Amino acid sequence: MKCPKCGFEQTSKGVECQKCGIIFSKYLQLKDKPQKTPSPIDKTAISTDLWQFVNDLLFYVKPETNPLILAGRCLFLVIILVWSCKFIFTPMKSLYAMDSFWHLVNLPFHEAGHLIFRPFGRFMTSLGGSLGQLLMPLVCLIVFLIKTRDTFAAAFALWWFGQNFLDLAPYINDARSLTLPLLGGNTGRTSPYGFHDWEFILKEMGWIKHDHSLAHFAHTLGCVLMIFALVWGGYILYKQYRNRNTTV
Image 1: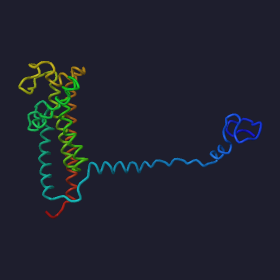
Image 2: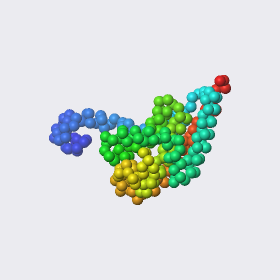
Image 3: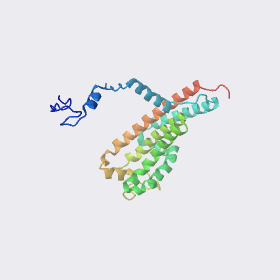
Image 4: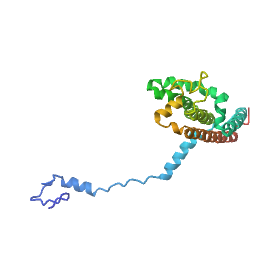
């Protein structure tokens, strides 16, 4: 007989192949056993599950909403909407974002970022200020989405994140001109090299000639994020209105 695996002609009958050593009975048993074909992936089910996850994460609202709380949030959204128009339609060079009250909210996180990132070297110390004021609203966004399950508050955290880009844009735009008043009353021109964060950052990266382009990109990105946050917050309030509790 010939070996069913290697085809070697056997000189005598036996239970295993004299060349490759397979056990004939076991080999034939495995060969004749029907092979399971993998079940096709249900892409529709995966897509549905992914959408359900995103919907539960971003658009969750409680089954009932107190009308007084809903009214307060609607008023808050209107105020933020009006303020956002001022931020978005005021030219970046007017420095409105840096002169606004919200700049005073961002400033402590900017300075804290310098301290937090100081152990990672001079470059990260300079960049850490901007990272600090961007990371704080992101942390709030994650906490509101996952921990407290308050999607309206998460929308405002996204608005704050976008507003920080508008707050940073004039600072980036000043990297070459160095005329912007800095903390302490100095300007980049009257301060030692490295005091102006974005002058140091862009020169170290070799991108100093792109300061205006990066500033306009940051400003535009911030506007888009703020608009998206307002739409998101408005949709959450609409869902809460439909689920409102008629008893106070």
